[in-house]
Image 1: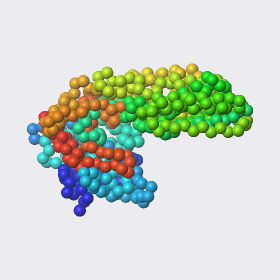
Image 2: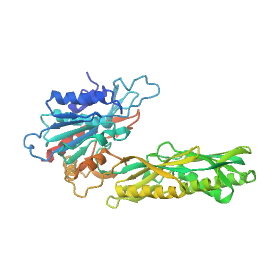
Image 3: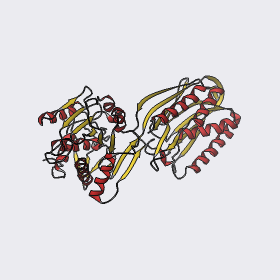
Image 4: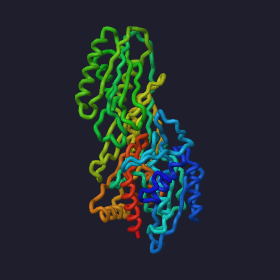
Length: 482
């Protein structure tokens, strides 16, 4: 007897539990892909599996819907496979251990894979059903979304007919996502020359800033520790003679830096003045960000005078100018969707590497032209100082569509079922919808899903009641797309 056997909708939870028995972390997707092929084969459904293990399954429309406009259902089959430090589970080979606590499903000591196993379960339940009324369906199951939307980027869509596209990879019931940001990583590299100097070394460490996701939380007004370090260094540079020895901060380009550290060389007679400037500048920062970064803290460590290698004066100035003057944070809000960020960037990683300083930015925009212009702004300033900019991980945005049959139908279905308006919004982060909007001309898309908490962590959980309501909503939308 399965753990989820008595839950409704029964077929959805049956397939979801079957999926949790198949290891399917990103990069380990062949087994689950083959499971989908077997599913299609057993039901006589046409399918295609490509070399990356993406799978497409076709199903004709039900009676009365044979000539309706084709609908694409889409989700990804990989999950973020993580476990607690005391778990002995092999996430490459072992099934998950499901648990139910009230309204929530989770997995003991591991992530659950609700993101995005629930999309797969919904779609399989529809493909298996003889009762759900629906137009012709094209079910897209993509791989390795969690490590860069690799499957969606690779997938050949030339044999697809659908323009109505339902992505089931959202995590909040009652919200229809209708646009997302595209993005890229821009790594700016500054060449720096060093020379030996007799000086005292002062180490500065900023920590405890709130940080957060550079897309979802870029509008929270939080400080970026790397940028604030630039502010401190500028103030020191303008008031005492100093040279940078190293600057390092942040962990990921798509995370607002919550820590940063620097080592600077100063003349012994200016050491006390330098520490005073650092403390006073940090006090200003602490006051300005008292609401958003209340736990921010600084530590200063002074070392004895010694002969050390430090950046030359011009290299120190160039580094500070870039840290202070490179754009960072929100650049433009969306004029069509109130409160929606359209274009931003984030200095997520700052590294000193021998004779180079590298600044890595996550650049995001739902307008490709604005994203590209922002990268060129970074390039122009970097090249003034003899540096270079390299872009990687480029993915397209998904622009808001003013005229959308699918969005209007989804909103009407929600109002019919629940008597109230759903939330319609865009997100300032990437979705596979962006990949498919670029590949399929005229795509009319929405993203939806049931409520989940703690995705990508061992605290991940899926709401049972929300799963049922979202199932009812999904089949209502299909029914109304006559």
